[in-house]
Image (cartoon, rainbow, N blue to C red; front, side):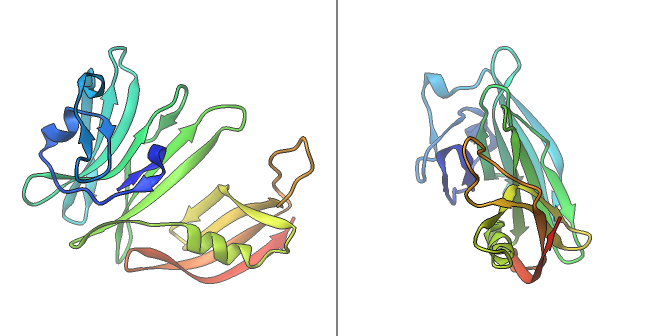
Length: 215
């Protein structure tokens, strides 16, 4: 499971749905959920978003008394009827998220979730997960980012916050900017783009080729 706001991952055990609905405070296993008065949500909303293979996938949103989303969890219902948590994210003011999507490929079924961060430099964080009989796995983009970076001169850097994963062509493409932009500029882009071709193997992105093109 990815707990993005805590900056760590975990492998929690399956639990009844009421376990997740009763608290939105996440801790490390084996406690996993902290139960006290401040952790009980005012309301929850459970929506089935599809199937990953034979496993039903749900978005569980934790709502405050104004109906605003405080946090989101992605759950998979196991054959036992219990639920395993794949992803958890706290919300900050102004942020939003899309419903979790199921991406069906020829030999794999993936989950995709996006979290949009508000502000002057607003950007999106994307998360991919593979699901099979052995469990779920976070699909890190690091192998693709590193493969793309190796194509660039030392003064340039690929920006993963301005990138796109294409499951039709099986490519990851990112804009390229200066690695050390002059102040007061904090982010540069659009000096070119780097493209990495990949395959999916054992629930992971595996780069098979990369190229860089200047604008």
